[in-house]
Structure formats: C-alpha cells, structure tokens
Image (cartoon, rainbow, N blue to C red):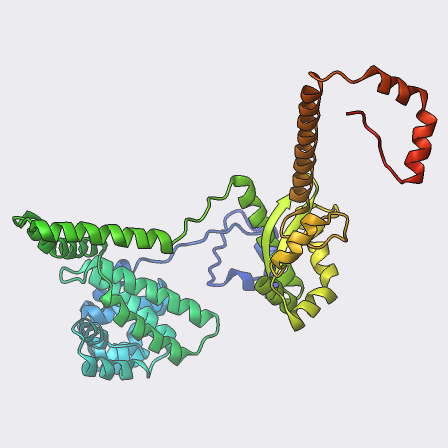
Length: 442
C-alpha cells in the first residue's frame, strides 16, 4: 500500500494535500518519511483532557467523580483517543456512575485512600495500620506502586493540608532510588520493603535549624551548673591546708617530670628520613607480607648520613626472625637503595645494643685489634677518631713547648754536642746493638 501511494506522493495534484497521522513514525518506510514534512505534536495536558471528558459525560448524563477522571487522564498519557477509549470502558464497568474506586479496580491501579492511609499511619507511627496497608500494596506491581506514590505526593504538595516540604523531598528521593534499583534488576518485593524502612528512617531525621536549636539548648543546659559554680563565692582554704596543697602539687609535678621524659623534637631533616624509612617498611610489606611483619617488628631506624650514604638501624631480631632477615636481605637492600639512594647503593650499618662495657674498653685500649660493631654510626666514629688525633697532636705540641721552655734556661755543654756530632757512627752502632730507638740530648 505504501509503495502504491509513493508515486502519488511524488507527483501530487495541485488541489490535493495529504495529511498522514501516526503514533509511531518509525514504523513507516524510509521512502515515505523522506517525501513528507514532519510535525511532532506535544501531549495534550491532563487538565484539557479532563475538561473534555467532563463535557462528554455531561452530554451523556453520566455521573462522575473528578478524581476518577484524573486517573483516566493519567492512564491515557496525553493521548485523547486512548483516554476516550478508557472512558467508554469505565461507563460500562461502573454502570453509568464513575467512581475512583471502580476506575482504580478497572485499571488495576491503587486506590487513593490506600495511599492516604499508608502515609498517615507512617507519620503517626501506627505500626499495625501501616502493616495492613503495606500488605495491600504488595498485591500490585512495585513500579506502579512507586509511580502512584509520586502522583500522591505531588497532589499533597499542592494541597493545603500538605506534609512538610522537607519530608516530601525525602520521600521523593527514596522513591527515585527505589526506581533505579528496579531498573538494575533488583528483587521487586525487596525494593518495596526497603522503601518502607527508608520512609520510617526519614521521619527520624531532623531539619538543620531544629538540630542547631536543640544543640544550643543542650549546650546551655550543660554549662549552666558550671556558670553557677563559677559565680558562687569562693571559700579560702586554711593556711595549713593551702601549704599542704602546694606541697602535694609540687611533689606530683616533680614525679610527673621524672616519670615522663621529654622526647627530643625532631628536625625537619630527621622527619624526612623517618618518613623515608616508613616508606621502606610499606614497600617491604607489599613485596612480602611475612618479611614486612618481621622487618617492622625488629628493625628500628637510628640515623641516615646523606654524605656517606649510610643508613643505620637497630635490629632486635632473634632466632627465626634473624634467619629470615638474613635470607631475604637482598630484597630489603634493593628497596632501601630505591628509597634512600634513588637507585644508588646505600651502606647499611647495624647498631648492636648487646655489646658489654668490657668490650668497649678493650676497643679503646687496643685500637689496632679487629674492629667490632659499635653503637655509633660510621660517620660518628670517623669524627671521633679525627677529634682524638687532634687532641693527641695538641698534647704532643704542649709537651714539646714545655720541654723547650724547660730546656731554654739550661745551656747544653758544647763538648757533648761536639762528641755526638763527631761520633755519630758509634752512636748508631750502640743503638742497633742494644735496640735503642732514639737518643736525645737533655
């Protein structure tokens, strides 16, 4: 049929105009759509549809309720033709007396009185009545229940006996979230039950202004007895009690100062190094959880020397933990190089707390013996060795100056000087025979 009409549409007579109407333009062939001009009509407003239905019913002398016509107009979705079809069915179904309850029954929609009772029992916290109305709503499709609730709340918003705007807004948001759950494929009965529980929780929420007012009142009630105590006349204690109180306070302050040692404040540089060490702990955890737990438990950061690129830490590991740290030291070393050295190799020095005082004394007495792990970093030991050498040099210089000062008033005998100068070979033979290291003139 469309193909037969196509030639006529291509070459229409001058006195003919073709008006084609359809509710679904996509069903027409593309050849027809390309040869016609399109006019898209908007939906007819529900008020206009209702007024037209009233005109028809008055001419037909059929009684009606306005709320019933509103349901018919809403079901027609802006199409007058569909709405009139529903009106004809309603006249026959209601026996020439159109009521809202009969129309709702015919359309399978929810009666407005059910929704009215549902929300009223919800607000009044009448649990028994609410459960009865909820059981009725369960007999309908959840999506249609949500749509009917939105229409009911819209009507309530425009009516004089409306709920609070804040409450309607909360209900509306809950309905919209429930619709989105349905679109995602959630169970319909579960969504409806969740809707009811959210409605009940929404009633417990307070407006922001009310919450602030309540908080201020509670604050005043809390501080009121304190203010009364502050305004009350103070009783001066007796002299003996006052002295005892000051002594006790001083003693407690002394005890507190002894018990709580003051922790030294870290410099910005030290804080950076501590943070880098924490980063090492985190990376070791990420590489191996067991190794990370042992590392965090036993290894304590001591110092980092950026000049010598030496990281010093203290190890408390024993037995299995110590073996695990030795076996997987390469993993820790690579992470330390990446964090502290940014790819460069970092020296790791170990602080040992178990060294005895005797070993430390031996190290001081015999510096040429085999070095042992000390409680100081390598940088600190180098600095101390340099300081010791400087002190020794100063002592030698002071001794030399003292000897020179003592020797100055005495005049050495020239004969002895001449003897030593003339018989140097003899003196060398005596030194080598008796293993004398040096000969000095006093």
